[in-house]
Length: 247
Image 1 (cartoon, rainbow, N blue to C red):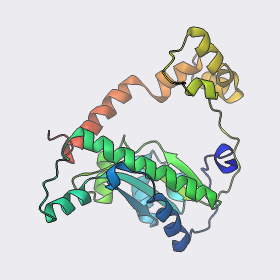
Image 2 (cartoon, rainbow, N blue to C red; image 1 turned 30 degrees about the horizontal axis):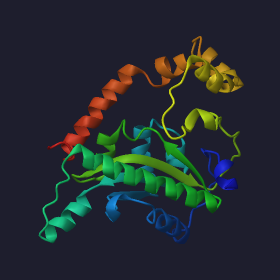
Image 3 (cartoon, helix red, strand yellow; image 1 turned 120 degrees about the horizontal axis):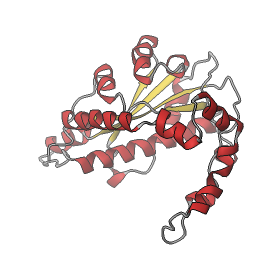
Image 4 (tube, rainbow, N blue to C red; image 1 turned 30 degrees about the vertical axis):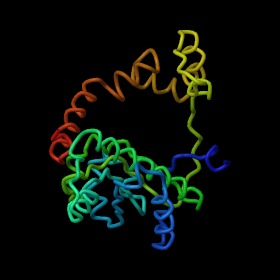
């Protein structure tokens, strides 16, 4: 519990390798995670080679973690393996549809988070790269992913070389609903977001981006509608190309 409650995202890593035995132990724990129908419709691509990291880095917006971390893990929604098993056993798979992608994506993300918890329990640090679905089409090319396979999450992993301030989180009552969903009033929103908006780093974001509220930083700068619409179209095309939108 202490590890979970006190965790921090690590973006700076010591120049120290992760042994194959330790990595396999962590991945084994990840592959014990919950999944849909025990199909395990996900795959994990391990990247250690520096040239491969350099090739992937621009697709992760050249965040330094992509090249400096000893290990990068790309978690993929993967019905390719399961479909082949079905075909080789005289069973007709029916997973060329959007629901199947969502199923596999959920499995992949559950496995990713389990790997993160396992890694942090061993003293390692991790960082999610939030760029995977933006650049999925190009990641597919570099990692040579066949049809039925789509990257959905990437983490970097290594021995921490920093101890950053723990990021803020909304209070529990802002997230948890008892029995049924209780919609938010204006006063609820004001109360739940007050501390986030008053933080010195939030005020700095507002000033640097020449906005008047923190919400505007998110809507006008960090996650713009034009970008959301563009990358939504890109991802939908990826799903079509990879065989998840045939029906």
